[in-house]
Amino acid sequence: MERLTEESDSLLLVALGELYEEEAAATHPLPLLRWSHLLDRLETALDGAGRIAGILESLVIKHA
Image 1 (cartoon, rainbow, N blue to C red):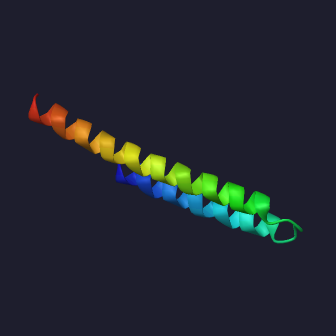
Image 2 (cartoon, rainbow, N blue to C red; image 1 turned 30 degrees about the vertical axis):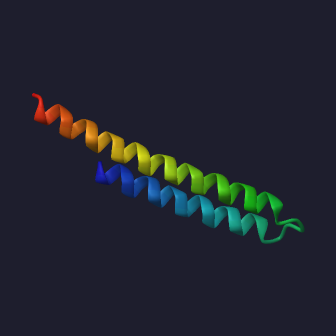
């Protein structure tokens, strides 16, 4: 599970880097803010899913 967490964090950083590179030449910063906010929410959702997976895993092991 740690591997998936590291991979998703890496993908997020790459996406943010590409977003800021592409939008640096843009005249309006609003799309940059929207995508940045969306990626932040996606990261929060993935972190929560990871926590839920850990809880479910511990429950399965406890009751196996």
